[in-house]
Amino acid sequence: MSTTNHDHSHAGHDHGDHAHAGHDDHHGPARGLTRWIFTTNHKDIGTLYLLFALVMLFVGGAMAMVIRLELFQPGLQFVNPDFFNQMTTMHALIMIFGMIMPAFVGFANWMIPLMIGAPDMALPRLNNWSFWILPFASSILVSTLFMDGGGPAGGWTLYPPLSLQAGNSFPFTIFAVHLLGMSSILGSINIIVTIMNMRAPGMTLLKMPLFVWTWLITAYLLIAAMPVLAGGVTMLLTDQFFGTTFFQAAGGGDPVLFQHIFWFFGHPEVYIIILPAFGIVSQIIPTFSRKPLFGYAAMVYATASIGFLSFIVWAHHMFTVGMPLAGEMFFMLSTMLIAIPTAVKVFNWTATMWRGSLTFETPMLFSLAFLFLFTIGGFSGLMLAIAPADFQYHDTYFVVAHFHYVLVPGALFAAIAGAYFWLPKWTGHMYDERLGKIHFWLSAISVNVTFFPQHFLGLAGMPRRIPDYATQFADWNMVSSIGSFGFGLSQLLFAYIVIKTIRGGRAATAQVWDQPEGLEWTVPSPAPYHTFDEAPVVK
Amino acid sequence: MTQPAHSDVDPVVIAEQRRQARRTALLLGIIAMCVYLGFIVATGLRN
Image (cartoon, rainbow over all chains, first blue to last red; front, side, top):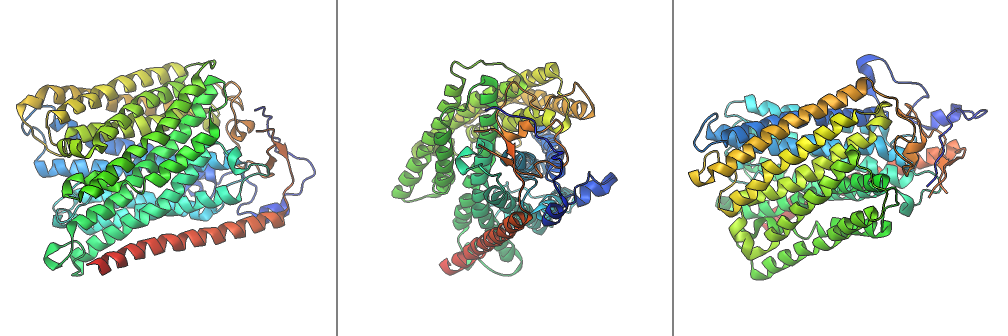
């Protein structure tokens, strides 16, 4: 597309009524801390989400380091088994609810209004509330580590009866999960109504950038899935404190029912995490291929198909609980079906690059790594989908390797790619490309050194969630731990690059990259505090 | 797409957009609450 810089002066236009019709006066940001506490500006709130996610990356990452340190050698070295279990549980909860989801909501806040030509999110005060719930919820969650009996240690899946044996931390964990879910639901509602109501004239649904599409579908998934988790953990709470027996066999309840409820939320959650990642990659690959996205409509339909299928595959997480054969067949085949729309996406990204004028700046490098490594995670997922094989793989390190390939070089690499891609638009400064490439190579090598050996460990029979293991697993565990330390250190470089870019650097142009597609590149860099006060018309 | 141009947007249209947004948000919130309570009630009835 061709783009022009947006003119904000628009002489002769009276902003008065417009301002009253909106939520916000036409002024710059407030000064000091109040700017961040009371802000209703989508860019400020996006920044808060992203910075919060960066901090939580290091909190959750520190827990991963404890886990890998303990697993460096067989035997108990540094922590006791209960604390190890607390680390695995909290690492997952923090990385999922405190890091990767807020990171993508941050991208949504920053970019969706800019991409659809809206002046802000539709419900700005709700937006402020959605964010500020997060630090409190996360603080409650982390504070459980300092309570009598420590934090939750039964795994992020909170399966009863194990999770009901937790100490004082239990009600706080449940409360934190409720709050984190509320934050996500409110954020999703805001995203849906913004996309459905605030698009610029001419921005029809099938002209929206793929990132907006993936978030629209993700937001619907969140509204459908999150209340199910909330219902499940509410029932856990009443089982523990109010004498109900939803999941207690002694009172006629069924612990396996919790697993069904949890995974009815849990599998869509996987796609809630990965669909925005698909959206970011779908913005980056065409930009650095200098070609439009191949098969745009197919990409939209594939995303919607993945969203639908995500609700009918949940029991593949629990093949070993003992299901009727027909159930196992259904969940096995429906899970395999997901490979089709996912492959559509992978082939379309590849076709976008075909005969393109490719350049390999840092966002493109991370996107390419995403493409290769997410596909590895997809293939190991297909192996796990085969019910009879899953009986062997279940609860082994193979599963750990699989979902980390999907979530780390998958979702996290896409988030990092998005950060490099849009940092110049957010800050007005170009990041240091040389350091960015060093960060990429360190991350790409160390992530594989960390997680690829875990396939071997799992296939050899090493169970997950154990602090000690048989000596035959020692070598690959040591390799994996060394890789994880490298990966952890590499992300310190990322934090340094981000801070350096915020503080200064070469000035970024409005377009930043070579002829990028989309309305966000028509506004100056950094994007002004208020954009699209007058809606652009998209032709 | 796209060549962005400028259009003046009627404040009445913006106000209506926001009203519509609030209505949709309320509906989505009610749906979320129904899913939440529905799952609890359904689980209770099953037992």
